[in-house]
Image (cartoon, rainbow, N blue to C red; front, side, top):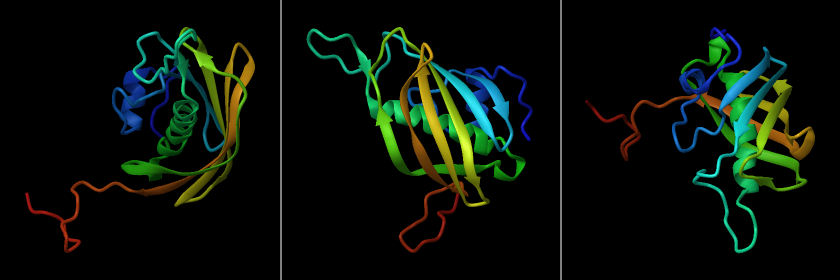
Length: 162
């Protein structure tokens, strides 16, 4: 297991997930139970590049980005296992996802992922996001776990020489 001295901050998270700014969406991990559950925090600031701004409405986080936040928290849970170091978690599906209310700039989103099934090459988890204790999104997410590729293959399927 990667050493997880809680809370994990942005730099510790960036050592686990391959994402980088502006698409590393998790600010902090506050709770962690290996192979069971994880809780993370996303602070929605006014300068988020993803906020949708419509006339007369406060800036809101699009539901697709909120779903990606939940997926990234689940990815941290999976990639923290020693056997998954150097692998990629590929978001492969969602089921029964419900967006219950908008998330606005200034909100602090608490994101929880609970493992339903975790195998060597796939995982299913249940995800929740809450603002002030109220659920804003929930649903089931499926992911594939695959090997990372250092270099893109050529047309013949072979790796390019250095």
